[in-house]
Length: 544
Image (cartoon, rainbow, N blue to C red; front, side, top):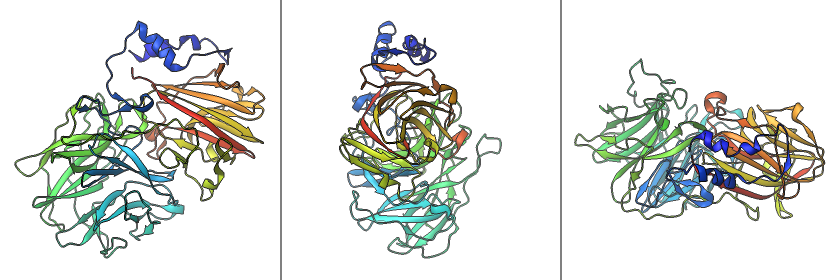
């Protein structure tokens, strides 16, 4: 079914220029009605909890992404029969959520490893050494220069230590490796390296040049050279150094994966003759800006590459995690063999499928901070604004709008979906339901005790303000292929009011607003009162 056909299913809702006091069918029912006249194609992905798309198709194959939505810069650890992975968490706190799998395709969250504020968190490295787990974190807290921090734990579930500043200044994208000398090293952007102390918790030498990466032809269309994301593997008689070059975003043909090898951690490093090993070559491909890879051995001894990419047409979802098979070649190198990543691929052999994802619907009866909910760029005291009480999650107001109120956000991985939540206004509070990228880019509805507000282009549209006495409201956001429809109800969902403005959000992404983020569901609480969140419901809508 085409996007136009999907929107036709909503045409009865499009008639009013403003809110109309009439019952409105949920988006699922409208889509089902349209399907009677236009049967959808066979499902592309498996369908999981709440209809969320999942990679595992249940027939021995999978379709990328293996973790949908904003999960960039994957760092993966094979730990016996278990696999653990985590990602850049940027401004979301609590952050650094660790995920677990036993087959490389089905992944479920373990929990957040970082609760102390460090500013924006970029590409990490998760590793295990002498029975202890480490995460190396590039961060720039409180406007300080970039440095590498470390946290550690004796168990992957935690508790994790507080961050320790290794005082490795001006570096990002750490990659941990143990050399043939038994010493520990971090390779960083550049591509440079620094030797670590035996405990892995301080530098034991200077940052020094390590490798001059292979350079693509000058006429290739890339963002910039930007050698980054070094990940290292010892396999056979060689150390293999996997690096990203070409820039993370910008032109879709920029980001790529290259490799080098050496028999010593000290070099010399030999360029792979097959570079680049992964690269998007045109806008017709299903995944753009592919790069930042790590090699990992599968459960049965086959080999795989994990990296990220933007989904064609859905940069709003951020960089998503992709899995591609590789093979070792007779010359001691390797090559990617996934081909068209929009098509099903055989799952890794020997793995046992475990849980996949988790339900986003939330009755706020337990703490899901970090795994699902996170404040965007919070101040040190923002977690004190939130408490579970009176049948919901209460958040004290802050600031005057979504831009300065540190919204609570929830990442999503579906192209189309519907979300509802009830907001109770306690005192002189203002609350609302958003799609939030950052303080410069968001859309949504706001509710005060006297008005319904419209937020578009990251500012209120005063002409759309509607007088209304409000103490409690149920709000619904429907996203169909980046076209947003809002409804709201003052009788707990018995009847719905259609908001008079639809919003198209496909341009709200990193190439426009920077920051490497994604467009997330958000709830804000502003003003002098408190906003109580109740009964959040999420449903993915079937793909076109």
